[in-house]
Amino acid sequence: MSRYCERTEPGWFAEPLNTVAGLAYLVASWQAWKQLEPGRWREQWDLHLLAGLIALVGVSSMLLHASGVAWLVWADVAAVAAFAAAYWSAFLFRVPRFRLLGLTVAWLLTLGGFLLFYLLVPGAMAGSSLGYLPMLIILLVAVGLAGRVDRRLSRDLVLAAVLFAFALVVRALDLVLCEWAVVGTHWLWHLLTAGALFVLVDGLLRHVRLREAQETNDGG
Image 1: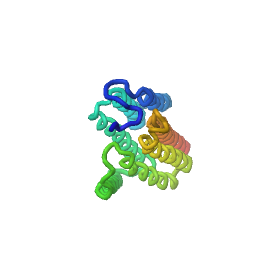
Image 2: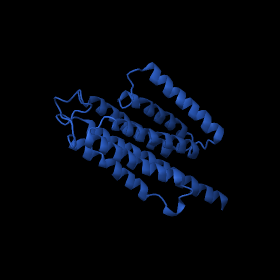
Image 3: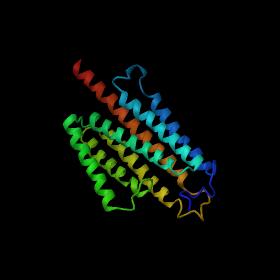
Image 4: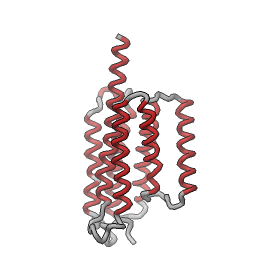
């Protein structure tokens, strides 16, 4: 049985809609990249990395759906995990301003939570819709942390969480609704998650600019 509704046979280009929908990540990456300041690589290297990782998610997704090669699922999952790890680290450093000790404790708690979740929920294997649920939980934690510092960023995170929650639903329904929706719903996962990733980076970048402006005014 195919992992995706649109794929009815092996080989290349059997999922044209899922493949093309992966372009949404490249658009999101480009829109985020355009807002960055080219002359400030040293100060904003983490934000540049996040914009680049969105593109990596898109490329890995398009390769997976275009080829249907099974092992590329792991490349796709790794790209998403890389973005999630980079964003969580950048968020903790930029928003609540955790340093080495705080980052270490936060990451130990995060990894412990992930491990506990996957031990208690055996069906949450890599690549499954359920396997992405901890990322939604992290988003909700980020909403709480940001609410103490920047309400606008907190609202952005809420929007990203809503988009991601809907994305998880349509991803899970892909094979369930296959007889009714011939092309499936997985392509909507790409569009919704691309939007969520852009909102995350855009909101963080806006927060960084606002905080820098406040510090400049306070210093002046």
